[in-house]
Image (cartoon, rainbow, N blue to C red; front, side):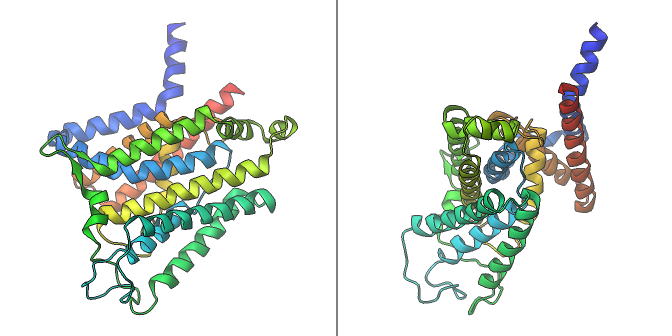
Amino acid sequence: MNVKKAQSFVTQNAIYIVLVLLILGIIIYEPSFMSINTLRDVLIQSSTRVIIALGVAFILITAGTDLSAGRVVGFTAVISASMLQIPDYSRRFFPDMPQVQVWLPILIAIVAGLLCGLINGIIVSKLNVPPFIATLGTMLIVYGLNSLYFDMDPNQSQPIGGLRPDFTKIGSGFIGSGQYSIPYIVIIALVVAAIVWVLFNKTKLGKNMYAIGGNMQAAKVSGINVSKNLIYIYAIAGALYGLAGVLEAARTGGATNNYGNMYELDAIAACVVGGVSTTGGIGTVPGVLVGVIIFTLINYGLTFIGISPYYQLIIKGLIIIAAVSFDMRKYSSKK
């Protein structure tokens, strides 16, 4: 009986075991990896990824997927950065634009992300296009629009820099000082996670989301307006991508049209590692947070010990395949 329990435990948690062993291997190879500075860097890098992953989790729980997430992040990063450059910067995106309150371009970028999500939701729910195909199409469209915007005169595809200090402070500032200071961006990510937790667990939309992902036909029969709920869910996800794009521009102090490339794959992998099922109907906010932190630890750790970026891509690909494979095995065993 104990052997069966052990086998069941390993089957249910195999991906966690493998990832924890990988992190332990990194620590053994380079003990200096375990430090307060490393932990802070991991949390800062995880912050925007958490917000993207929470948006992707909305979609995965409805048994959908969103391949446009990364490109929406890049689009909104460029939008916010293009409007928040210092007045005397030599290559201002809008040379004659007056200084505006920092919140206005941030709001415009988040609304742009929301509109991208809204379009995804309409295509999926009203035109009955499978989410994979719908978001693949919008991914290409958003990247094309972003590239056209980025290539406008006088910028002509030059990296956007010279961002205002009141904007970059959001991504690089700290509360307190010294070793135990807390980054603003981490606090923002935690606040967003708390809001999403409430949406998942305490609202009608959250209950409907789980019902749609568990069995869409049963949800329709029970009186849930599936189409309307999907539009809301995709729009919220888009707004989260928009916020993540703003924070990414503030964190890095610039933006290009290639920002966010493949972020959606990391987000999907982190969600699945964190227990969000690709079959729909299952997923929690704490699980997503754990999945993102584990995935970021591995990314950061592999870079820390000098593993080639090309090998890192192979490892990340294997993690994605393994995570989905174990998820499908758990789903099959429950069935």
